[in-house]
Length: 96
Image 1 (tube, rainbow, N blue to C red):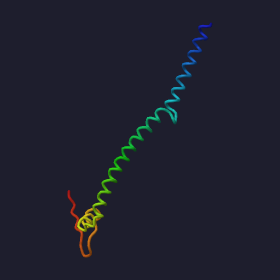
Image 2: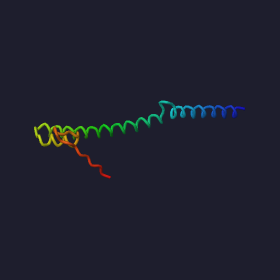
Image 3: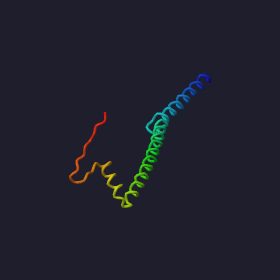
Image 4: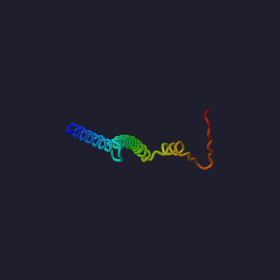
């Protein structure tokens, strides 16, 4: 009888431990959620790094335009922003 009681207690303890581990892994703030958030943080850090490089590139472009180089300003305005002088017409060519 004593052996049977110890066996039941062990099974209850094991079941409790398994339920606790399951809860720690699968609940809303469990280990799986932690791994997903850790991956998301990594992706966001990569995106921030890319944006910082892009910002540095744009700052360099702004610095080159600030040097009062009218030809560079005009070329940038035409190529990037489709601007034109009075009386000019823009002809667009579709490449297929």
